[in-house]
Length: 120
Length: 106
Image 1 (cartoon, each protein chain N blue to C red):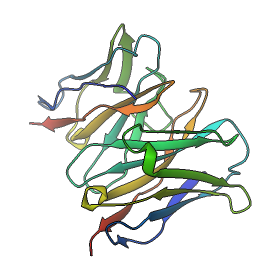
Image 2 (cartoon, chains in turn green, red):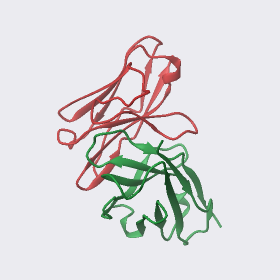
Image 3 (cartoon, each protein chain N blue to C red):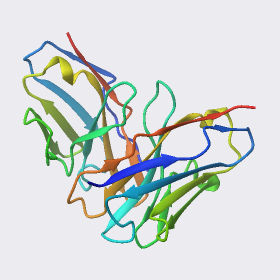
Image 4 (spheres, rainbow over the protein chains, first blue to last red):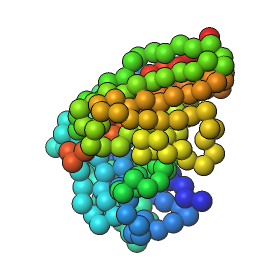
């Protein structure tokens, strides 16, 4: 069964870089035709798409975050990562990773999410 | 990314039918996905590709799309269906989520 698990620091200081990893189990991150996504949700608010990387390595990001976001795929470790630079308190949220079929022929798989707080 | 609009709240009595809409200009060309999210949990996809239902999702959940509006229908609503529901779609510019609809079972 395919599962995703987010990991990384739960507390990040303002102006620093938030770094998270999403590890895939039950499958290979280098096979199939998928988009590997990052999504976040501030407390009490809705879902915000951050960006994705395809199995082939091409990326696409939310225009509102694009200047601060880097998403990378590491096939040797079967994971993909998110870096969000110059964070502020507004970046405090639950961060989810998700696998989405690029050709729409199946449902998404989401991680359980990890809470990241930006505070000094 | 582009805008998807959902009603903030929908209320129904148990056994009734709930309909949650999602409107967006790109929906005629792009598929809609629907997610159920309960407090403290990750979203779960209940409908993908406009109307496909994943295994394990009850048959009372169905989806449809016509023009610029996608609709999630929950027939015979049960107390356990009370949750936030989000639509999602994508175009060449990226992915967007609707603002979410809180379904209250009276």
